[in-house]
Length: 69
Image 1 (cartoon, rainbow, N blue to C red):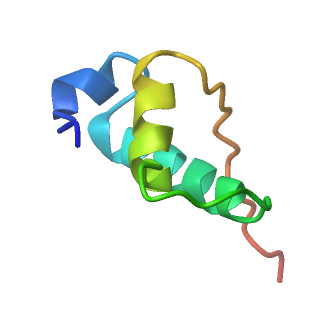
Image 2: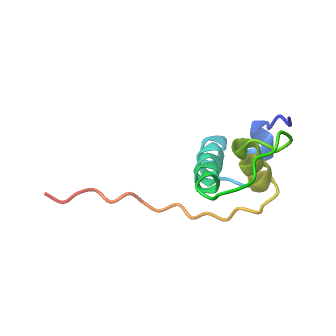
């Protein structure tokens, strides 16, 4: 299993925390799709971090809207 350092991620995200959040969201999305499970398959989080570090994931940060009173 490959180990990802903050330097691997921060090149593709604004900071390492945002990179981890993007990869986790991508892993959850991948988990929704049916797939064949094999013993040699990479974990979804590892796969998502690889895709993010290679620049295959595009994302946009959307500002959270505060409820109006």
